[in-house]
Length: 385
Ligand SMILES: NC(=O)c1ccc[n+]([C@@H]2O[C@H](COP(=O)([O-])OP(=O)(O)OC[C@H]3O[C@@H](n4cnc5c(N)ncnc54)[C@H](OP(=O)(O)O)[C@@H]3O)[C@@H](O)[C@H]2O)c1
Image (cartoon, rainbow, N blue to C red; front, side, top):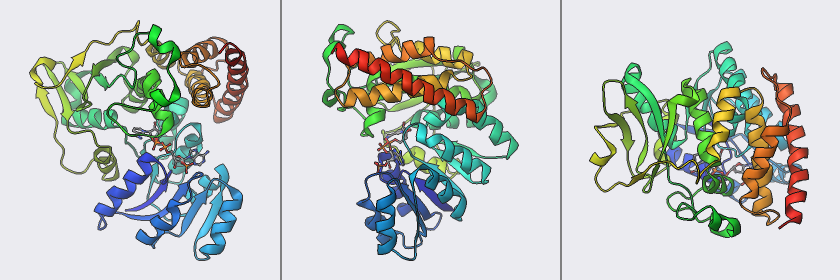
C-alpha cells in the first residue's frame, strides 16, 4: 500500500513512519508533508527514497528544498496539501495534521478515492456530516487512528448487534488530581506534562481541559452513528483499557493493552485486517490492577459541549473547534488563563451563527467568524489576567 502521510514531523506522523518501517513489505511512503519542522525531511528521505512529493508549510522553505532535491516535487501552504494528495500515487492518506487545517485534506482524500486513515479528529468535529455524506457519495473508506475509537471499532467488529453503549475511557489529563479552584492558576508548562501519553502540544492541552474527550465523543458519534445518549465516559488512571462497550446480553467488552499509539496506527493502516484481541468482563471491578472513577460533570463541565454539538450538529462543531483552537494557542502563549479556554468556547457556542445543514462554504464562513469573535474575547480576558 502506497502511503501519503500528512503531518510527518508530528507525534502521530513519526509513529506512523515507525509502523511503515517495521512493515516494509506491506507499506511504502511515497509522499509526505511537514509544517515548520523541516529538519526531519532529509532523515525521512534517507529511509524512504521512493518519496517523490513533499509539502512544506512555508513557501520559501519549499523553494529552498526543491533546489536540494531536484527529483522531488515540492508544494507549499495549505493548497499544497491538496495538490500533494491529488498528485501523489498514494492509495492511502494518513491525516496526522493537528487542527482545522486537516479538514480540507480529509475531504480531498475522499474525493480523490484514497483510503483515509484519520488521526485528525478535528475533521470530524468540524465536518462530521459532510465527511459522512462524501464517504457515501464516493464509496470512500475511513479508518480511525485515535486509540479509543480503534478499541471501539474492534469491539463493534466482534458483534455490533449486541452493543448498546460506547464508553470512552479518559485519563483526566495533566490536572486530574486538581480541584476546579486549583485550576485557576495552572500554567501551560504544567499542562504540557501529561501523565500517560506523549503527544503534540495542542492535544495535550485539549486533554487537560477535557475538550479532547468532547472531541472524541463527537468523533464516536459520527464514526459509528451513535447519539450522544449512547456514548459515555469513564475516568481510568492507567490508560490500559482503551475504551469499551456495554453489551445488551450483559457485561462489557473492551481492548486492554499498554498505551502505544503505534497499535491503533497499525490497525488503521491494515484497514482492520489483522488479528486483534478484545476482552470480555462482567464489571470494571474484574480488571485487577486497573483503576476507574465515575465521571464528574461538575469537575469536567466542558463535556456538555459534546452534548450540544452532537444534538444540534450543523455548525456547532465548527464553533467548538475554532473557539477552542484560538483559546488553546492563546493559553500556550500566556495570553489567557486555563479556565478562560472553556469560557471562550461557551460564549462562542452561545453567540455565534448556527446553520443547521451547512455547506463547506458555510463551514468556512462560520470558522472565520468564530475566529474573529474568539480573538476579541481573548483580548478581553487577557486584559483581566
Ligand atoms: N499524539 C497523539 O498521541 C494523538 C492521539 C490520538 C489522536 N491524535 C490526533 O492526531 C492529530 C495530530 O496530533 P499530534 O499529537 O501528532 O500533533 P503534533 O505533534 O503537533 O503534529 C501535528 C502535525 O501537523 C503539522 N501542522 C500543524 N499545523 C500545520 C499547518 N498549518 N500546515 C501544515 N502542517 C501543519 C505539524 O507540522 P510541524 O510540527 O512541522 O509544524 C505536525 O507535522 C491531532 O488531531 C490529534 O488530536 C493524536
